Image (tube, rainbow, N blue to C red; front, side, top):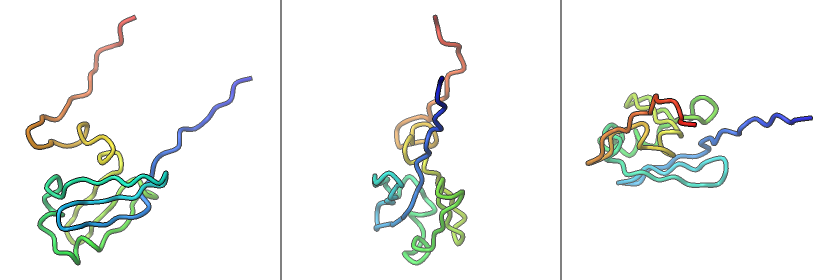
Length: 100
């Protein structure tokens, strides 16, 4: 008899911003950091605005009401799939069928 195991989703549990980086603590204990230049609204925000965040979707993302910014955990873990990084184009998902 087979057993079905649901894949656990990694969620944000805490958020902090320094002058130049966003750091997100994840439910599995990892801390993911990204430069604020990736997020112009956060980079231009005041310390108070950066500190006023809330988790959305049970931790699948972070929302900053005052600056209308939303960032998903998925985009922090795989930024190449979600945003245009400096000097790198956004990678498009392949729609080709696997060979075999």
